[in-house]
Amino acid sequence: MKLVLASKNKKKLVEMNDILSRLGVQVCSEAEAGVDVEVEETGTTFEENSLLKARTVMEASGMPAIADDSGLCVDALGGAPGVYSARYGGEGLDDTGRYRLLLENMRGQSPRTARFVSVITCCFPNGDVITARGECPGTIAFAPMGEGGFGYDPVFFLPERKKTFAQLTAEEKNEISHRGKALALFQEKLKAYLAAQPEN
Image (cartoon, rainbow, N blue to C red; front, side, top):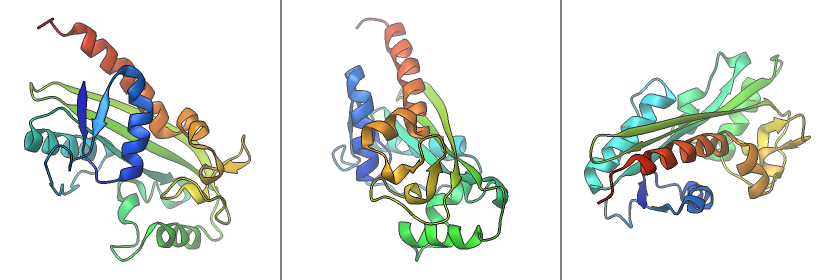
């Protein structure tokens, strides 16, 4: 089965394929599906934005589309940056600028508890929808550590591992991350969905 990923993030495409290939599912990029759409993320929850992205790309491509909306929710900041994680601090900032701004806003704040959230939605041309949510708890580090991952990974610290997400190998991260958990649940739901489809 082939799904089109409603994202232009190449690292996300690799991560999705790593995990879903075990189910015999191939995930292709929007470019490979011949679509180029900009989705305005007007939702106020990860669920709403994930559905918006998947539905828009499914309609544009005519193929089942999978979208992930994820972000970092920091308790001391009232759940921010949340759904605005990728746009935190405005358009001018890159990943490094965003996590530096977060560290600045966390100065003197406690607790430093936070969680990464990922919601995965798959929309099928027949109107069916599968949704799965995963969360990974952690804390905000006092300084960035590690070279791996992307986004807020260098400042998201896992006390039980004594490492940030950026210090984990890809395998370790997939095992415990919010996206890894959401994809594991999504895999189960997709497996059941495919098994329930009538034979052609």
